Length: 95
Image 1 (cartoon, helix red, strand yellow):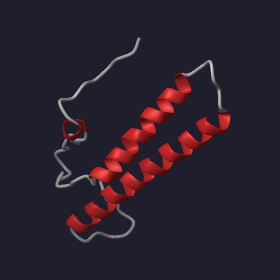
Image 2 (cartoon, helix red, strand yellow):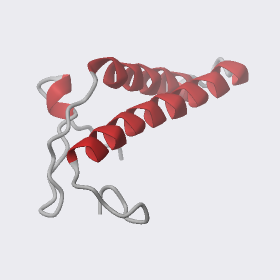
Image 3 (cartoon, one colour):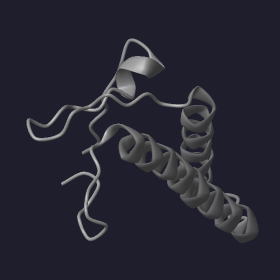
């Protein structure tokens, strides 16, 4: 059974729930969010298309999704490291 979650806008979908121990003063780069959204849509479309299994296109879509996810995560980590107090390098940025 599929469960769909809908949002009024892309901005609403990208709001991260706050955790009591972590301040959520992060902003998303719209270009990175759009890149990730497009990559996910393309990957889903290719995975669901059973009639035409272009494996090279599917592999490229998976790679782009992974790269887009990593780029957005790197952006968020960089933002968190700029706003978080100085910590020992062994600590997690989000712990």
